[in-house]
Image (cartoon, rainbow, N blue to C red; front, side, top):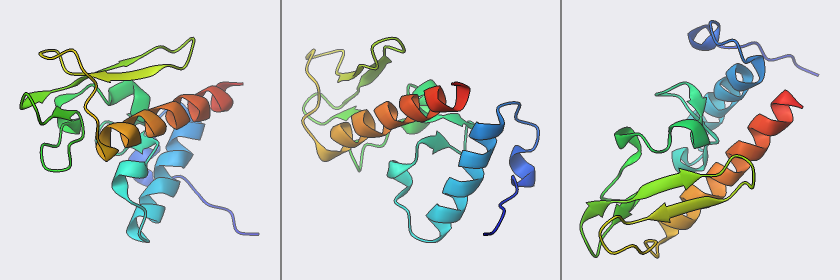
Length: 120
């Protein structure tokens, strides 16, 4: 059994589970993990559900946090108690019907669960 150490980039993060998950997902991404499937964000060094509302997570090409119909950034709301994740266009009040939106919802729910498991 091999022991993985936390990457130096994340050594100052107090949440050791988050730091380890960031390290692991970095290595998995280098090996082929789709970056949109990550539960952590290496840019913000946080759980995805904690920073997905940042403008850095908008991608017009892939449709992540983007309403193609209105050509506007979609908002993401996360309910930490119920675990609900919603993506909504502020203009048309609809959830963009796309693979990217479903991927955001799935990844944020998994991020919430992983963060909860790390603190349990």
